[in-house]
Amino acid sequence: MALGNYYEATRRVELETQPLDGDISVDVAIIGGGITGVSAALHLAERGFSVALLEAEHIGWGASGRNGGQALPGFGASQAKIKSLVGAADSKKLWDMSVEAVDLLHGQIQRFGIPCDPVIGYLHAAVKPRQVRELRETQEELVELGAPPGELLEGEALQAKLCSPRYLAALTDNIAGHIHPLNYTLGLAKAAMAAGAKLYSQTRVTQVVPGKSVAVHTARGVVKAAFLLVSGGAYLGGLMKPLAGYIMPVGTYIIATEPRADVAAMIPGNEAVADLNFVLDYFRRSADDRMLFGGRVSYSTLPPPSLKDSMLKRAQRVFPQLRDARVEFLWGGNVDISVNRAPHFGRLADNILFTQGFSGHGVALTGLAGKVAAEAIAGQAGRFDVFAKIPHSRFPGGRAFRVPALLAATTYFRLRDLL
Ligand SMILES: Cc1cc2nc3c(=O)[nH]c(=O)nc-3n(C[C@H](O)[C@H](O)[C@H](O)COP(=O)(O)OP(=O)(O)OC[C@H]3O[C@@H](n4cnc5c(N)ncnc54)[C@H](O)[C@@H]3O)c2cc1C
Image (cartoon, rainbow, N blue to C red; front, side, top):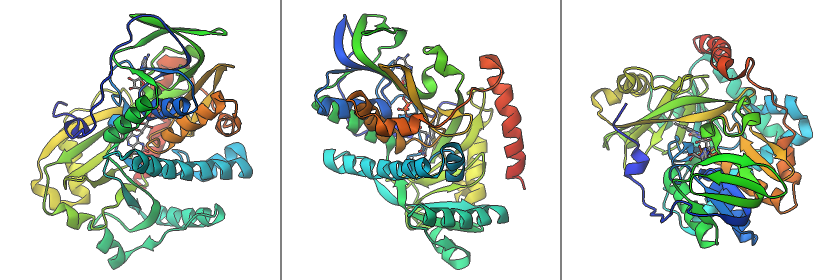
C-alpha cells in the first residue's frame, strides 16, 4: 500500500505525550486515544475527575486520525432501522443527540481554536432510480424528526453543485460537513490535557481485572481506577472478550490526489459527498485543493491488491476530469461494524463502560459518546442509557466465522448495489 496518510503529513497540532511508567491511581481510566477517548477525558477532567487515558500507539492513530472527515448526524443504521429497534420516542432522542454531536464538534473547534478546516455542507448522492426514491423517503423522515428536509437536486441544479456524470440526484444537508479529523482529534486531546487529564501514548493495555477498583495492566505499570471506559473501537482486538463478537473490523481506504486547480470546480460549494451504495464512495476537497476519495472495503482488513489504481479508477468514474491525476497519498483504517450498524454502548460491570460499533459513522458521534460516557460516570446516566438500550447481537459463529457470516450478508448488499 505505502504512500501514507495525508492527515499525518498535514498535522498542525503538536502534542507532548509519554508512555506510562509506574503504577498510578485515578478516578477514571480510558482505553483508546481516538475521538471517543479524548472527548471523555476532556469532559471528565472538566468535571474534576482525575483521568488516565491509555493509548497503544499515539493519539489519533486509529480510525479518528484516518477517516474521511465527514461529520454527519444520524447513524450507520438508517433512522427507520433505529426506530424499529428502540421505538419512536427513543429513536427521536437518539436522532437529536446525533445532531447535538455535530453541534458539539463545531462548538469544540471554536472554543479551543482547533485548526482542522471545518466546512458545513453535504450532499447525499443517488446513483440509481431506487436511491432517488430513498432520498425522497429520507426527506419525509427528516420532516417527521423536525429536521430540515434538505433540497433534492436534479439536472442542472445538481450539475452546478456536483460536476459529475455519475449521479441522478443529490439531497443537500446543511447540518453535516467535513473536517481534518486528525487535527481535530489532536486539538481535542490538547484541550483534555490542559483541563488536567493525563494522556499516555505507546501504552497498550494488556489485561483488565474488574473489581471495586479496576486494575488496568500495561507493560510498564498498572492503573487502578474507580471507573474504566473502554473505547478501543475496531482496534481493541480480543482484550475485552465479551465485546469482541459484537463488532467486525472492516478495512476501508482513501486516496488523496495532488493539489489541483480544477478540484474546486468539481464541488464548487465544497460539500462532502457520499453515495447511497452499501460499498459506498465518499469524497471531498481538502483545504489544499486535493481530491480526497474514499471507498472499497476489506473484510479481512488486508489491503486489496492494486489498491492505488482501483481507487483512482473509482474516483475517475465520478470525475472523469481526474484522468491525469496523480495519487500522492493512500491509506486505510478499520471501522467497527456492528450487526445492525447501530452504535453499541453499555456496561461490562457497574464501573466498566464501553462504546463501540460506530459502523463507519463516528466522526461526530464519538465526541458525544465521550461526553455521555462522562455524564454516566458522573452519575447522570440517562443519555448514555438511551444508547445502551439499543439491542445488539453477536456475529453468528464466533470469531472464526465472523468474516464468512459478514461476507454472506454483504454479498446480498453488493448485488443490490448493482440494481
Ligand atoms: C478509512 C476510514 C474512513 C472513515 N470515514 C468516516 C467518515 O467520513 N465519517 C464518519 O462519521 N466516520 C468515518 N469513519 C469512522 C470513524 O473514523 C470512527 O467511527 C471513529 O473515528 C471511531 O473513534 P473511536 O474513538 O471510537 O476509535 P479510534 O479512533 O479507532 O480509536 C481507538 C484507539 O484505541 C486504541 N487501542 C485499541 N486497543 C488498545 C489497547 N489494548 N490499549 C490501548 N489502546 C488501545 C487504538 O490504538 C486506537 O488509537 C471512518 C473510518 C475509517 C477507518
